[in-house]
Image 1: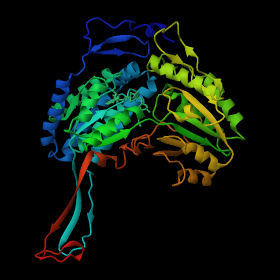
Image 2 (image 1 turned 90 degrees about the vertical axis):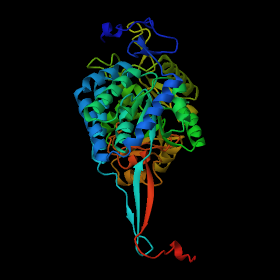
Image 3 (image 1 turned 30 degrees about the vertical axis):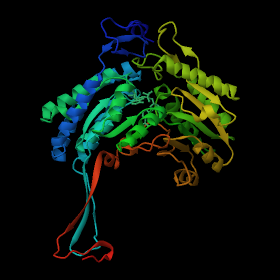
Image 4 (image 1 turned 180 degrees about the vertical axis):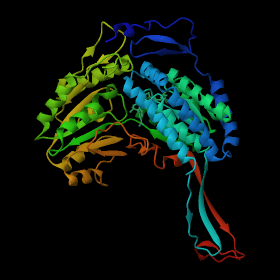
Length: 498
Ligand code: NAD
């Protein structure tokens, strides 16, 4: 543990900020670094106005040309990968390899979006009428308001922005109030990419602030799509407001991800997949493994191995090369973890390892915790809720049907996995009556998705899809075109009129 580094930020906010400013903190020490001014209502209004005005010309810029801007952004992200990863570690507390991985994901989505800029395909359909052509065409949608969470302070923005820009949309971004510095850096890189490629600077606007700032975007009629990543609570507040003005919403909300471990599973592989998914990123990924559903014949053996692996997990300064688990984001996250562990034990759960607060002396304001494993007698209310911290609950099953039922009996539906060597079980898990999640994996953990696939989940996770596959369609509007190139006017369905 680099004690010196843990002390490099002061305990008190630095002088000079106004009362409405954001205090930039680092979870590494829990200390404040400096202030950044929040956008006031007028600035948010102006930012949306600029994005809206810029859309008028950006939408008619050929898509492959729009792709040049995103290509340049990808080059700049490659050039500044280390620096941006430093900011991600500083603000979100991610360990170095995960922070670098987050920036790599941004580079990957830029590559993907550049290719997409020549592949925004529509279809032609056979018309039922002679001399007619029926086709659909995808057009830019408008201003996309991006609300993002603290735990992917840069990648979620890139998923949305790279794709939205090639689709011909403009973007107004309200990042998490916990990670404004990373956002300022991303915005600066995109501004530079725009300058280098001659794209209008108004294609991207950054507004810093808290949920009130976000709400202004949510309520603005000029924002055609609100792409909101965060808690289910946030989604519940945002979705009805956007719906009330007939805007579009793309929701990427909380998960409560489960893995089923069958008797035939390769346990060496399963243990590695489980420990990374459950304890990695200090349990602060939307895809973090929170529920382990293990066959009763192997439960004791598997749990012993997981507990053993947990005892060897280095927790501490995320900048240190050996660390695998960094800090929790805030004291409030720490309280939520402690309360969840209490409730689980009150429900009859047995805490097998973890839950202790670590490094109190070195970093009294930070919140480092030992990742926890709790064996539960049943899937109680606390297990069904997402606690954004490293707690994995272990449940057991007897039949595979029972495992699937347990797995699906939670409000969220983001990511899932099965560890098995039995092909029937694997296919059953992926089938229509198997996992009800947007992401279903076989023989790997629940976290660590690639950008090529569409990312998102069902039920309380919100139903949105981002990133790869055809997720781009959410950022465009579809127009169906019917062209009559004959001299007749036959009506559809054989209707006779005049
Ligand atoms: P959060 O819900 O507290 O905040 C997310 C963003 O929404 C922030 O920018 C916040 O300012 C804004 N916001 C909150 N309430 C709002 C409101 N009423 N109106 C407008 N804006 C509002 O989430 P968080 O603590 O930053 O992130 C953790 C949560 O995000 C977890 O639940 C996690 O599972 C989820 N998450 C989901 C995904 C996904 O892709 N499904 C990805 C990352 C994180």
